[in-house]
Length: 258
Image 1 (cartoon, helix red, strand yellow):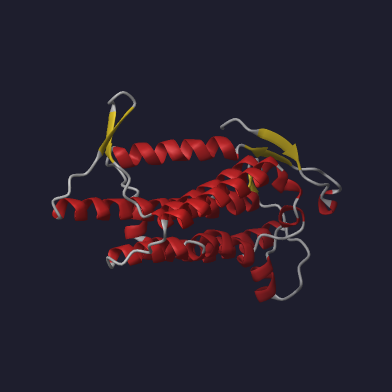
Image 2 (cartoon, helix red, strand yellow):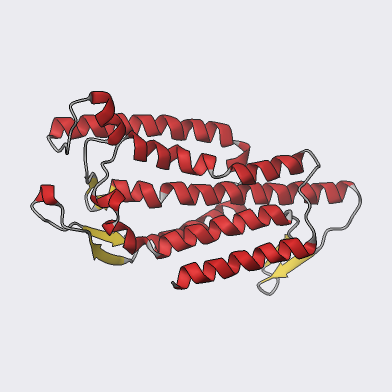
């Protein structure tokens, strides 16, 4: 596994006060994911724009898996006798969860699904929209006979067209990147939170993390992309855009160093 900080959760009463260990290597996995996405996109193996192009099917799969994992977790919890604080109502217990600390080996599934799946997927949706917007604008420039500026990076080892993504969509992509980055950096603070210590792993948490967060919080990015596809992009003044970026970075610095 990738390196990370090992922390202990709060004492779990149902386990006789035992403190479970958590390997918090979110930062390492985050940057490995970014490198992997870059390589797959640049190599043509998996263009990042495929995410937004197939957003409907991907969302459908996420919703289906949210239901499947919910039911499977409930059945496994009941069959294995590892249920916790059951109400007696099957529907309620499926919704709220039957197990408290579901694990595969040393991997806490509840924490993994809460921090790794939703926020990374949200960023990749926004990144996909930003790259798609860039490609659309480059194509329009070519069609209009406007030469595109080419950037030569890393001593000429990499060439790419100058970024032509709209500033509002760049803003959303940066905001989602910073949020995921903060989540990964602060992952070691999560094992002692209410979600991990008290909330059971049921439909409420599973479906929300698998499908709710990434496919609802991305509305702003998809809206901006759709405006671009309609050739009617959101347009703000340069001063306004620069002010937003400054406020965002200042807020992130306060949050990240608090």
